[in-house]
Image: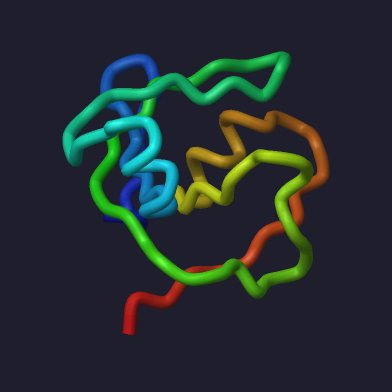
Length: 91
């Protein structure tokens, strides 16, 4: 699901969210959410959840959580900003 390029104007991109967020916010698979970077907003659809700790390049600031999404969608959401990201491997 992360290998496809999604057009945010027509198709919400899939995301995987932390189980804690899913439980605390009562979010179900298939729910559509809005991600907002302050300058851009994108509708996404929850396709999965993960447990455990993020152990990538850094930690989310404050109470923010790590959302796993396609790289192409990150580029659209964050525009020309410099991105720092880790690659998720489902194996």
